[in-house]
Image 1: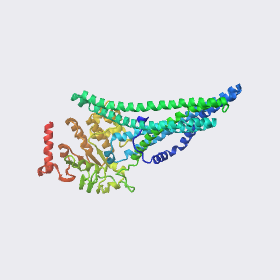
Image 2 (image 1 turned 120 degrees about the vertical axis):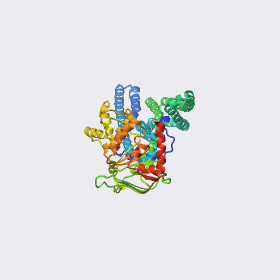
Image 3 (image 1 turned 90 degrees about the vertical axis):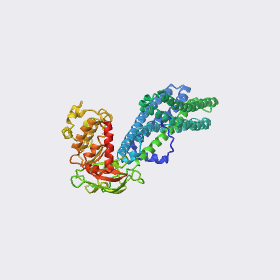
Image 4 (image 1 turned 45 degrees about the vertical axis):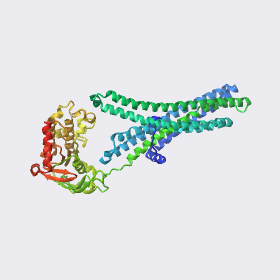
Length: 593
């Protein structure tokens, strides 16, 4: 538990975190209260055992009263059944409450994540975000299922045993308490060394996992350059440091737990020595001595459990801090409270009015951009890498808001438009067609899940891909697998184009859907694109000459500004920036062929 769920982070305002976490689970308060009651009943039933044994020994065995022995045994059995039932109920109730809480938390975090804008995802690593819903939630799960019930049980047991010891014999209780400073000192020293050792373990396991991932991901390069042995040596060094860190942690454990056992055994010996003398002197009964020893056996274990629970709590608090950090992140692109819908069918007229934008507001990518795109016009945006082409496309789809100026569609500022209305009107097809795990049908109908098969086949017919779809093994029921890996890149792009057409948007933003395809597949996709873009306003990020040639107008972007714009032939004839780009394209394509 130290290695897996410990945390090296300093937790700011832990009580505030716990209060906020509790507030999120307010709907579970009665179920949680029932679980706590069950834990209390189970603990009290267990703690009553030594007192029943004392009664049976003193009033039954010593007094030679068989009836008392029988009643004591039956009473002990009843309490045992109560303890078992209550403990089973408590475990089930605690786990149920914890899982219900975490199920809702996962949904809440995921719902918030998918509502955040591209700026957030551009600054966050996907692996880190996934870990919020996996490893961090796992730390919370472990605390809720194991730590929470241990906190209650161990605390009640320590308090109950302490009270029981004094009830049985005050003098003997004070003798046992004399050992407590040694146990507390040993626990503090252990925590200092264990925290240090397991911090190193967590650091080294990260390096081991990183080395493994790098070696496996780059295995082709490793083999191509015959560096298997060198890579193995590197892994050996990292793995050896991890091994030594674990040995240091094992040393701390090998000293602490035997020390606790020694103190426990020494305490029993001390109780037998002092208590035996008190029994012989008649100061306490033999049954009390037996009960005292039984209580003593339960006194040390919950203290150790509370030490482990502290570690789980630290890990849970760190996880809560990270999860709440996501929940407290507000998207930069938000729907206005007074957002409106389109008053009529969308024509698709887009205007950029003096637009300035930068991913870092202090470093503009686009400056003072004025641009109007007519309904049904196909605009190709070209320029060198980093010129701002994709940024214009993302602004047009309102994945970002400009720092200055405004962007309108049919005269309505995108910031004043309802998000659902905007997403129905504008569809973006990325450079690589991303498909979700599922069937071809589910991916085409992603934007309109209510689509019938007839409607899907109609879309396929318009795009000219019906024959291809019917050639698939299970047609629309064909499973595309994770990220669509069952299909080729060209086939994935065809499905993504069908998905865009199924959404029936007035505006298509296209990040060059054919740039990564072979010539034959490119021709198929280009034909489908022609059908998709017909009658629709299109902003096309052009990386190839053919794409620019098919546009109604070409916009040449340089350093975030419009360098040139016009029809293909006119721009070539002018001999400007586009003409030089076209010469570079032709040279590259000739080399390819």
